Length: 201
Picture (tube, one colour):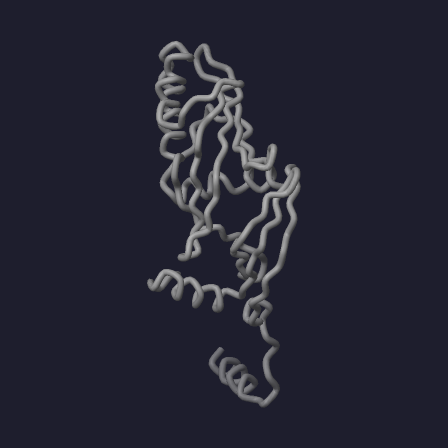
């Protein structure tokens, strides 16, 4: 084994440059991506649990088919809730603000239970009452109350350890236009440290 190791070391010292791994190719570009409502729904269904868990929130099982769409020029989150006597589609309009530190601040303004507007602050109480005191509806209400204002890191992992950070967005008719900054893992890490002033993994 030792001779082979020596041979391998000698090979590495030959002037021929080893091929650069795809993940080590420096990249720092800004691109625009347009997502229609169906694509937004697909991304949210794949990533929502992950984003929530990063923030210490576990999505209650009673929440079915969560989705995010653009409706009438606004971002809307919607899902189906079945708990006790209550079976309804709950939707909430929200704003997204990209902060200077690179995080995205999501603020939920109000909910619709069916067609009825319910303020975010009282959603838990309302759901408990409508479900006939079902504790699961109350848990969902508590979860929604927590979501009134959260911060997430708007970053999507790509192949070859690259990251796409959402730096801006525009609401279109029936979709979103995202401006993303695609970086290799080293450049991304440096930018993150610069944004937060704290070293990150």
